[in-house]
Structures are given as structure tokens and as C-alpha cells.
Length: 419
Image (cartoon, rainbow, N blue to C red; front, side, top):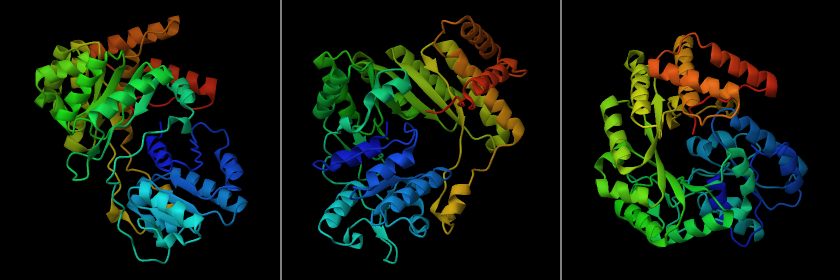
């Protein structure tokens, strides 16, 4: 769920806000054009790479429908290189930092006929560079989930699993901010009842940043007797350093699984973490983020070895394997927006790409719930056997499945290993 857009829309309480998720709209440009004719402002969240082209198309369509409509961009690419956005000729202002107060300031300025250049936290063409806006110092308002088509997300996900965020920032940063445990517990219970959810997924950047707060949330859920399952992300060190009693309290409060991103693969550390989760009655999703070009290509072999050991240890452990791609840096600035849109990450060599694709496919199929159809059941059995043996070559099953998906839907089958 687009929790960033949900937070911005909820911050503008009292205003008529429409959140458009381009993944669900058959014609997102047409929807934006329809709304642009009477809108005060269009805000677009943009990421580096191909999504920039879609952001440009939508912004140009809106500007054509309403020439005076202010267009404000925010998101990861704006934080990386706001100058390339402003140089596009279709963007009036950028938010290179936290967007809540800057967007609210933009709305207030437009309603009082003041220029966007007067709003703190906004970068506009021709003006001096502005420092990225800091996150708000006051706690944000309650998320207004009525801004989203929640049922559509449940349908796409195949489960009534609701995304929720209770903090912002990372523990290393001085501006980390978390909601009070009482508020988190109260909102979790209310949202669970209102949307009849099967679980709550905490989408915090650093849910374990404050151990006392974490324990208080778990205790609050236990005391409330809420039959609410939940999931969250953690670091390996969070699990290894947590007292066993704390992990057991998490399980008692309804925690079903922790997601742990394993970037620098160390087999012993992963298995020690898994053992602590198993002893506490917790499941684990170990996402192996593999950099094949490092360590002479040994990272993938180590990840496969650790993933096989996890599968043998506990059936509640799942082990997606994905490519690690280095993020772009500010040092890469100076490109045009079209150049940023065309920019691709350095590809792996074909052999390494093939090895990872095979392993990721068979681990995903082995850990998928058994299907009712005979073909799916047979595929799962074969995948389990391959994982047990560690043999992923001659992958005829994978080729057949991907070809079948292409013929049936006209699109390539999504690669396993994502979030």
C-alpha cells in the first residue's frame, strides 16, 4: 500500500484529497486529466529509472488539460537530483525532503495566491537551492485509510493483510520518531476490526529502533487479547541481541513472522538467528540480497547453502533470493531527466543471472502453499526435491511455467524474490 501518499493525504486533513495508484488504474493518465480540470495541485511521487517516464507522461497530460495547474514532484528521485526534475519544463516545484509540511504550505500558498517559491521546503526553478525539509517534529495524524481502495489491495494480495506504519526514520538518525505504544495498540485493534483483517504488516523502516517501545506494544496487544496476527522487519542483530523472553512475548502478542534482509551473507549468523526465532515460536522470512560481482561470485553459493539449511530447520522459514543492486548516489547528478529514465543498473553476466533465476524460482515454488491442482502440487514436490538436493540445472519445469504464464496472460511471470 502507498503509505507515503496515505501519510501526505492524511496530513492535509480537511482538504479534498484523491490518491491515484497507477498500478490499479487501467488509464491513469485519463484519471489524472479528469481530476486536473478542477484540482488545486497535482503531486507526483517519482523514482529513478523507467518510472520517470510515466511521471512525465502523467504530468504533461495534466498540464495539457489544465495549463495553470501547479505540478509538484517528490519521492526518491527528487531527493537524488531535483535539478533534473525542474529542468523538465513540466514541474513547478520539488520537495527534496519530507513532504508533509512543504505540501501543506504549497496548498496554503496557492489558496492565498502566493508563489510556491515562498514555501519553505520547496525547490523551484530559478531560485537558490533549498535544503531538504526535515520530518515534522510533531506526531502525524491518524492515517485515513478511506483515501485508499483497501479492498482492492486485499484482492491483489490474496489476503486481508493491512499495511501500517508506526514510526519514521532509522535508529542511527537523530530524527527517528515513533508513535506511543498505546496509540499503536489502539489503532491496530480498531483497524483490525474495521477492515476484518487477517493480519497487520508493520512497514516501519526500523521497527526495532526502540526496544522498550517494542516490548510495550507487544504487552499492550497481549493485554488487549487482540486476535491480531502481525509481521514486521528486523535486523539479524535485533534478534541475536534480544532476550529470549522478549522474542517469546512477540510471539504471544500475535507476531507470526519477522522479515530479515541478509545483505552480507554469513551462514553461521543466519542460522543462529533462525534458531532463536524457532525457539521463540516465530517464523522468519530471510530475504537474501545477493551481490554476485562481489567475493568472486561466492555470495550466491553461500546464500543457497544458508537457504537450504533454513528450509531443513523449520517449515515456517521462507528464503527468497534476489539481486542486490547498488543505489544511485548524488555524485551521479548532472544528467537530464531522460538520461535518468534510461539509466539501468549494471547487469549481471548471463551465467550468474541464470543461476540466480533458477535458484529463486525453485525456492519460491518449494515454499508456496500446496495448490489444489495436480500440476501445481507436482511442481511443488519437484521443487522441494531440487531444494533438498541443491540441484537447479536443467530447469525444464521453470521454462514450462514461465512459457505457460506468457501464453495465458501475455506478460512475463513476475520474478520471485521481491518484497
